[in-house]
Length: 498
Image (cartoon, rainbow, N blue to C red; front, side, top):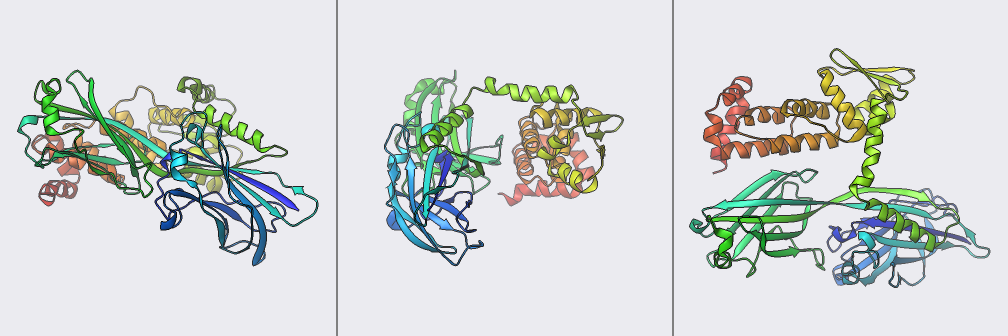
């Protein structure tokens, strides 16, 4: 008899975006004794079918394309493990699996039992991580244990906090929208926030990310005093919903009304409404992999390893910073290198492994153009010495130091040319924060040159809000001289959006 186990950790499980009928699939796995068959575990956070809503469904699934026999007999058990609470098991199941077929438990446990468990060291989602466990048996007789396989999936979560200040509150008309828009620091892109008051004085909030695949999971709206003190808060979420609700547009009912704000006179000393928003978005599967195969370890040992890993990821930032510092030192001390980067007037030594890990463009150069060469050399056309130095600092340490507008625009160009995604995000965020009427034209040209749709829309919106100052400036004359078609299209947006 072959006995095999698969353990799957799902981080940030509370923010699984999947609705009823939508599955989260584990990384695929196989093992000795499974005759070339390939498997995955399918989890339905809100149930597989409509009849299963309110439950977690868990299934073992065979790949449609593997090298095994057409029909494969198997015994298996599925479970969700807890810390400090009872594990939940399915019955032992004995099934024949054809290629592409799934068998499992449509109602393994109630969703509320998992979601409502404390997000601490105990429960079904300790430190936000759900543990799924699958045992597989095949054959009879002497037990041959195969080394267990562990996998990890992380659900991406981004939290954004911002203030919305509205002047002349008392003169606001019913259904008059007040908008604010900004770029997030990560992958959400542009976010637009509107709020208005209905005829009855009820406050309605709209929060719209530019990427419709990013799901708003929770939001807290707080009323602030002129000094920034929180006077009242109201929150809403869809994390606990049996069927996921769209909460991008949400009336706040009686929690925050026009009259309740007027009654709280300390919030309107200068007839200015101040609101603070804290929003949480699910950005999809951020990471997944088979992490390790553990030889000769019990389930209890694996659970302890899982707990230690999760706690390590929650260490204070100051304790984790040393890795970045070590890499920065590695760069500056020029430990034995194997590649030269040629800038405008100067060469910089670097390490192939670092360049390949951070940039698919550098990786392609190394694998194709320079394969077999003992000492490689890359010419960085169009990049100045200081820019290359800052680029290397970022590649080694993920940090940017004491940079101004001109420095960041040059790094932005490098990030796009060499497809360094994290650097793109950081540069874009910096440029968006520094956007003003004096540099809007320059940033519009930059975004258009690199086909950065999110940044371009952000700049266009800013320009339309400040059209008199922008269109009448010397900076805008440069835009019209450099790219008259772009300038005219931007000016016409005013009429297209009316």
